[in-house]
Image (tube, rainbow over all chains, first blue to last red; front, side, top):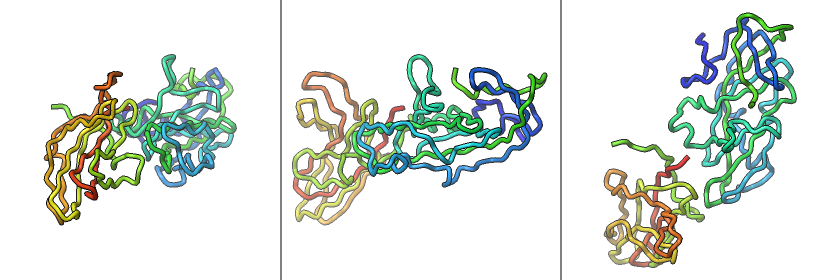
Length: 183
Length: 127
């Protein structure tokens, strides 16, 4: 199995091997884990969400916004981690939030959006990589319509890997460091 | 020459997408804010009973007609199409001039008669 750099610009692959140690930046500190299990989450319909339908609306207004909301398909249990890439299937823009208060992919100058253009120059969607760790740490997705016309759908698809983790009491000597939280 | 990559779309006028000419400039594609657009395919059908013409262009901020393509002849009773390699690489841009002569960048078609059916495929550039 190939081991990727965490933002490898190639196809997605696990950040480390089974039994490797991970240091995950979350909750504003490094947390230490060992990987117990990894399985892929292929790009597939259960991990496609139409945010127009999910918001209870029937149409997405021109230049409109769908308020950020949780994606139930991406909920995790404790000691589980999702490692995902994503893109829209319609001409809409997605903005990633950690829980509801922390914008992700967000330098001081603005909050980046993932659009249909993202994959044109980044065909493996490496720059869309993010992580969801454990229960009640869900991501939130806000959606914008950049079109001057209303749209019937705003579909997004997610794919990647699911990890099962075991917590370590202290920092291991050998580990892969994973910035899973914005800072 | 570098070829830029954009996203291909049907025309995006706020209508179903098939334009029926009214012999005045008819909106085919509304340019989204922050993007530019090129026509990649034109398809038409003329069943009006006479030979007609189409001209593609845009409008200025005073709603004045600004032709950007040469006249296309449409024989009666025929459909026709122009594909990417046959079309000039005209980029429709909102040129941001506040004055009346500023261009909107929207794509419009001027048909010589009422009732010519027109469909576009466009490529939008942006981020």
